[in-house]
Length: 71
Image 1: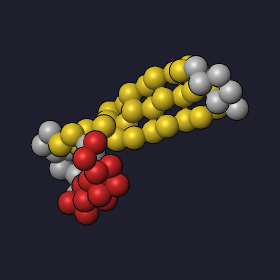
Image 2: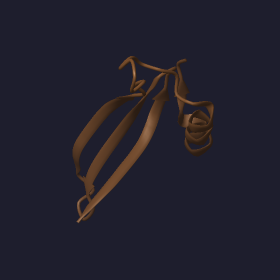
Image 3: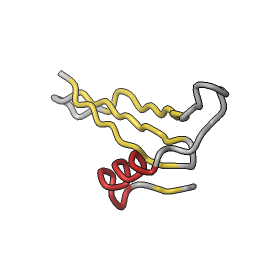
Image 4: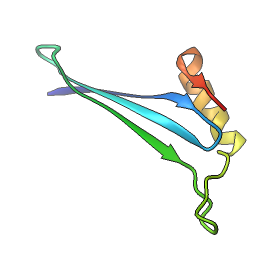
């Protein structure tokens, strides 16, 4: 069995970063660390676009003080 932890570590104008940790739940050994950046693209122009305020608020409310806001 594995314990998997995921959070959003930072929020920028048009992007945010997921961080993931995977531990073996019996030994507590860290098996995997992973980061990925998600970018909000305008489907018409295929260019980055500011994340909508309602989504920014959901992320900020959920992550609280651990969230770094960079834009």
